[in-house]
Length: 372
Ligand SMILES: [Mg+2]
Image (cartoon, rainbow, N blue to C red):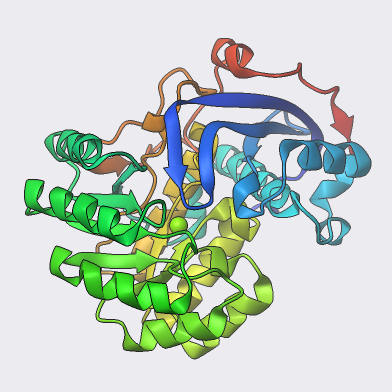
C-alpha cells in the first residue's frame, strides 16, 4: 500500500507580469503581456509544490485581481474542493491548486507528475509553433524561422483580417513551407456563413484543422460546421462552459478538442475531459494559455499522460508559447528541440522557481504564509 497523498499545510502566493516579445494578435484581441499568480505550498515535512494561475481575460478567464481576491477571501480553504464556486478567475485558481498539489505529491514520491497521472507517459511531446497576425511577408518569415528551428506543425491565427487577406497570408505560408502541417484558429470570429466561406477558401491550403470558427454561443452552428466541413473542426473556447463541454462530448460535435488546463480547472480535470474525448474518437491537443514555465510544465505533463491513451496518434501540442514571452519565473525557459519537448525525469513538475527571475517579473512581494 502506498502512503497517503501528501497534504499541503501552508500556502503563499505572488503575482507577476510577463511581457510578450511582440504584441500577439488574435481575433479576441491583441495581447501585450500575461499576468499571473504563482502559488507555493508546503507540507509538514518541508516539501514544496508550485502552481500558476494565469487567467486569460480576453478568453473570459477572469483577471489576476479576481484570483488575488479569491485567495484573500478563502485562504487555505482553496484546497477544500467545494469552497471555490463559479466566478471569474476560479478555473485558473483551481488549476494552480491542482498543479501545486501534484508537484508536491511528485516531489514526495520522487516521481514526475506525468507518472502520477499515467502508467506509461510519453517521454517527449511534439509541439507546434504558434504565429500571431501580421502581413503575409512577416508571417511567412516567422513560419520559415519555425520550420528551420525544427517545427513540423504551424498554428496560425485567423479571423483578424478580411477573408481575402487571410487566404493570401495562409497560401503564402503553404507555398513557403510545403511540408509543414498548418492549423488555423479563428477564436470564434465568424458567423456560420462566414465560417463556411472561410473553410471552402482554405481547402486548397491543406489545413490540418480549424479551431473555433464560431463563438461558443453558436453551438448548433458549430456542430453543423463540424458535420459538413471538409476540414476538421476544433473546439477550444466552446469547452470552457461545463454544460456546453458535455454537449460537445456527448454529440461528438467537434473533431478536435483543445485542452487548456488553465481554462478547465487544472491538469486532472483536463485529463478527464481528454480521456473521454479520446474514447469518443476525437483528436485531443493540449495548449497553454501563454503561461510561465510552471503552467507550461503542467501542460507538458498532461500531454505526456494523454500520450498513453492515444497511442499511434501523434499530435503536436501547443506548448511552445514560452518563446513569445520576454520573462519567466525559472532560469531557463522550455525550449523545444527539433519540434519536440522532452519531459524531465525529476520529481514533480521537474522545474524550480528562480527567485531572481521571479523578482524581475513580480508585481508584488510574496504574501504571508497562510496555514491550514
Ligand atoms: Mg484556440
